[in-house]
Image (tube, rainbow, N blue to C red; front, side):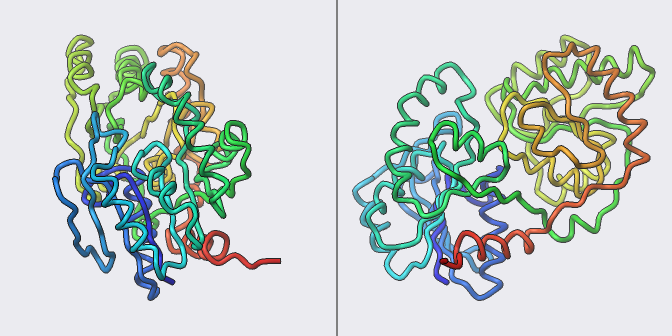
Length: 359
């Protein structure tokens, strides 16, 4: 097959969507398929082409205030490039309706006779008052292109429900996988709670810090807190950590292998975010066997997995600390969860999304 992926960013940019696209694209190339990735790049003024592990990557200049929106520049040239690139394509897979680049590309190609697959990564709303306001209009624009899509794929059952609720479209949920080598790792707890990802207020990392402090001061558990990531809430979070007497500070994102090594040694991975789609960090922690704490409603995607505490944000930090303390004792007795590899997930992509058998 000849496939074109459209995504907000691409490797070496670190992020959940970027990691998923890279994982799928490189495995398709290894199976003999041709894959081109069109992605946004805010640091360039002119389009740039390169090859990464057999994948043709075409980076397009975008505006990305706050590392969001990914608004394409030179849209006339972009449309011409898309119409040329799609010739001979069997499938175009569009990733993230939160990206203007993705939705614009879908609009440009909506009349083309090529199979179109869309993975929205839809959270149901924006994460700030301003972004929630923008979504009121952006949602209608997305609705306008959905009739031209052959398959809508979501990364979780909850996301499929949100897509059905807000767009009246049936979606096919296929959960993400993990790298094959991660499945061979063992959990080796080394006395710290870990968070890795975007540093945003809605991620509630400050509440995780409160919980770790309570675990140590009130419940006699000696745990450090390690935070890795980037985002607009870093300065505020660092000031808050100082205020409550926590010694840790936010560390920059790590190379993937180093991140996984740190994850494998965490006594607990915490993600208390208000909104998520299907966070890869939880998937990877589950695969290694690291105990995780997540919250409803999105955390229900991981129901049935062992070493996974699903709780609620309406509880106090003190109540959450007590719940986590009891959970950590129990988690050690449980087996690790069953998580699919990316090769297994790509098999399903090909069968269900790219080459479905028509009845």
